[in-house]
Length: 172
Image (cartoon, rainbow, N blue to C red):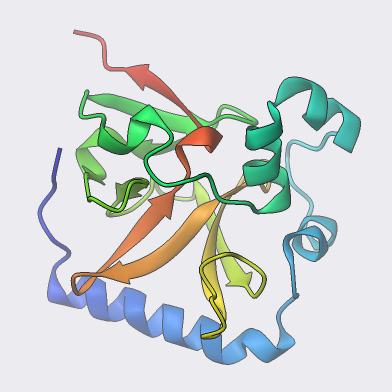
């Protein structure tokens, strides 16, 4: 399912915030563990409990900031109406009406639900590729890493790992 592209004002505002965040990167924390220690999330669990409730891939993505292989999760090309929530704490993050299917093989959304996603500088993520920091997208409730906010085809969109999501179809 595709949505209308971002309007110019929204795009420029988001790009300005992203640029400011990257410029402030020198004072930002260097990795996911530091961020998790520095912020008080509503849902906190010891590592052993996270490992019990998540598969190895889910733990790697959500708790260690990893990335699933492209096209490895069925959500990347799913088009059913519904809500995508955080697999670690069930917070609704994205509505399917904001989803866009791109050939890269991850789950893409034009934006999240209000106050659902926290952003931060990710210096260690796979998206950096030696070109500088990336903007990380994490769950506001539990701090789980979901992916990154990227620029593709002149649009700022959320590139999300399907392994970190659950899907609830819309009632018909």
